[in-house]
Image (cartoon, rainbow, N blue to C red):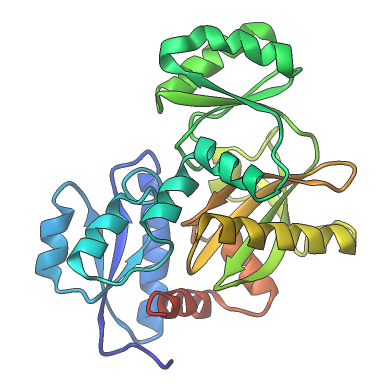
Length: 306
């Protein structure tokens, strides 16, 4: 398929989630790449009036540069489906399940992927927190069930840190996850179309790959390809592709793993709309395989029409 230069493309960015600023960076990078490629493109800053704005804009394809709630969870996908506008990335169901870390873990386990020990705690039943200590030892990771970019995530080393970490996570969700912190290499697999492009290793300057490490330049080191034995590398690539397929993802995704000392890849989550900023990982992986950022953006756009 050649250029879709006769179509008006809208880049959806901003949005209403806690990841608004990251989405604006993603959207502007995508906008610039499409302009460089000669596409007819407009920016759409998504707000509550997005349905009316999209209708008036006359766009024929949507490039979804949103992150987090309403953008990555199936909500905007449903609006675009209803409007008859093709869009980049995964559909309603894969987006919704992928955003919910609890549901996605169940899908991963059902497909034979390695999932670390975890406990789900509901806001109305905070006493469940004590159960975590009966099935897992410190350190623990506490996180909201449906947030991205490590928003609301805490690493907990002591009993007295557990309740404050839960309070923070409950600010973002009615259900939270308490997970066993698995020590190992943070490795993330990029999927484009129906192939695993490669796996990148992240070494954060902070204790774990938190919001600052993800978006502030110089706060993490990236190694591509990931520094693991070849058989481990191939296994994590296959696991990433299996996770993408298990959720029914489309177009592209980034799948996050921790590889333990034995070389076992424990899946953390699938990002159905991975970041596309200057420090983002999928563009890093693509560059490592010879795909420039504008070419990556163009391929993602092409896949929206497949």
